[in-house]
Length: 403
Image (cartoon, rainbow, N blue to C red; front, side):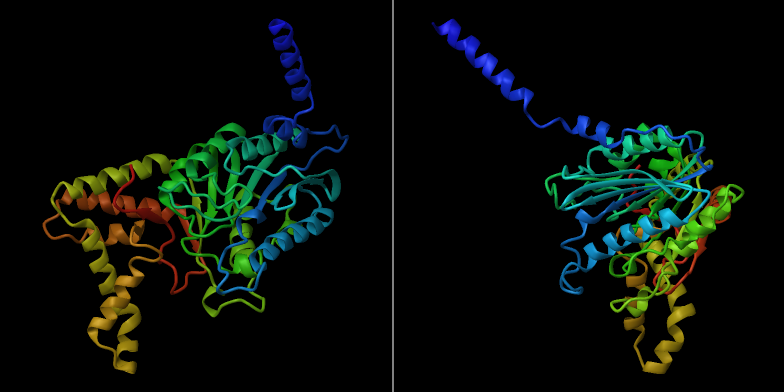
């Protein structure tokens, strides 16, 4: 009797499992199933990951309810319109929203994939982005892929949860890099997110992409206004990757500056374009150089901060001090603040090298090594729209060192 009961239970559980919801992996495979098309795809494919479900709680004290959500959804609507207008390119849109997921693919102005699902996306699962990139390469083979990540930024040393669909799931650069390893390589990664121009971030993605476009600061207008992707209309098969990267940096991140909630200070965000060929070795040389200076018992952080304070006083605040009667102590405090925007562990690489090569009694070999690092970084970093709110030269690093 007991044996029959066990058999009945096993059969019952098997029957229930056959009606169970499909696994997340099966959902992704169905969502990202490419279709056959007679259209010969243009040579450039633009993939946009639009993470609306990350923004509900952001700046509630400063913005109207739903303001950030609306901006991401408006980006999606704007890109859908551009998808039907932009010729000579392929566009893939993935929207992660509170209502589920939406995938659209356009080629040469034609909508060829349109899938809306109630299933919600796990951004913290590397397969979500990794399989999306695989889909892009299967759907549009032999094309150059440009990836836009539209969500929150993340510090290079922190795994954090910001997906309100799955608040317990943490996300960070290691997960993002795992996705690129699964679905890359890509031509360029555009971080349409706050504070992503970190050397540590670039070091993690360098094996999987040729270039990165990002900003050192909070791109607040991306939340209250949205990005301007109209450059997509101007791309042809003859447009070079260098020109496309410049168009992304200038048009998408720095020039869309209209809207009722736009703050004065966000009208010109500093935007960085970095070419990553050889960057991994350059970054490791920079870390080794810093460690050699640390071995001399030099307070690296203090030396950088003091040098930046002096620079800010001489270049920015001297006239302000005279005009408004501010004390030297007030100016020093302001300089210290600028030296640590947006947190106490973020410093500009080129600025730091400029400060450290002036250390008294630093050996000629270390000075020469620092100057060569400075030149190499300056050669490969392009900074658009420098403003008083930038860290001046375009690429941050974490100190204390993470590697």
